[in-house]
Length: 583
Image 1 (tube, rainbow, N blue to C red):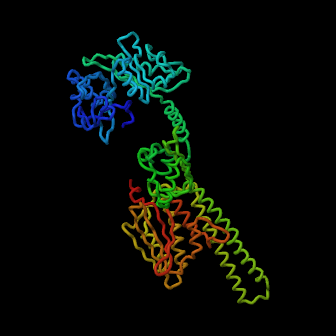
Image 2: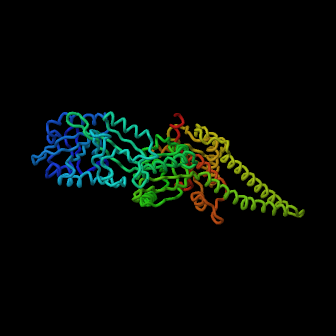
Image 3: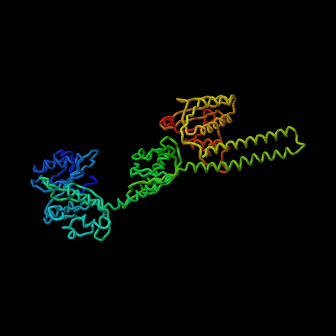
């Protein structure tokens, strides 16, 4: 049954052909089943005198001339008795198509046994307030109100009947909606307004009022049918939502609101900036547009189970932007429930913690380098310096000590150069947003010139040029990977393969550097993959961390795998910007 049905008696029809009759209507008309009406015409159950007016009402509704219309007609029941009713028609969505719903309200003498029975089982059981006024009398007084109206307003029926509905107005009632109702009544047209009304105890409530003129077969307005619905909770929610959105507009955190099914209804500017999706693109879609593939189905199943149960969910995860860039977020999802505890919306708040994560890693690594690597180098230099102070030192041993000092000095210089490279990653003036053209073939030729004793092979899928954010920064990471591959090869000549592969489905390009050496130690691989160093488990240098940080800064992912039959493969998975660069 549609949510906007106001009684237990209604029809759904296309034109004047009936497609559905509810049980209430079947009882009213004396039918045993709804199938007796499906496919029949409305004119078969309405006396001929009203056919023309009924067809006109249905046509106006279907054409969208007015949202709702009412008509007083005479029904022909299956028991050969006639019955006066009011037909109130409006457009609805029914089984995926636009149809007309006509609610049937009986008209009977209020004090008759039949009238009391019908009123009890029809309008008086409606979940909203229903009124009928008589414009033929002075000031258009109310001549009927249902129990729902009495409950809504707190007034007993005897204090309501005979009054104009304006008695519900008060200090905070705005003139604009009142004037709108007055104009519609004077024009004998339907109208819906939202205004502040007051109950008998003085409490204010928001009232959505719909007034529908009821016409006779001659077209004369005989009555006005009114629907009153308390929308105070809805209004408060709208006000809270407006305030929330005002605050969200200025937030640095990405915020989105979805309906209970997970369809995005709102995103703030920070969401647009962080994810690359404009609000117009994101609204109507599902948050799965941000899935990176870094979390498994079980992760999302647990998330959904928790929030649909009404519990707040919070976790750190990896998301993906519109352009395929990965970024780390701390996400909190808050279910919004109504007064009955039903979830009406979800509010997701995401804080981009990529920079915070990289900062923590950088400080940990540099702390380890300064405390461990530099200290060891200085200890070696100091020890050999003491040996060199001995004038009787053997010349051959002296050369060994000098060589050791020079080796440590070069190692310290190397660390200093790496520190400068790390500083460039964090350079606030660097542009990590502009797409740069990066020619792999040209760089491979440069590597062959730089390392003439190394067999460097290039395998490029498609065009040799790719597009990345900040090509200079990526070149540093690739240089580090090639140098590391050469260093780990224990055969002559060293063999290094650089592969470029595009993955359109994942919107990524993969640049791999493979060697046939002894392989990268498992402990070092674990440290990089876990993203955390400990006193017992740490990387031997900063080279792999530099590759990891550059890749993360550029929105990609670094992976380390075994090569076959031996060696290692370091892969940079970066956003595939081949199309983005030219758009």
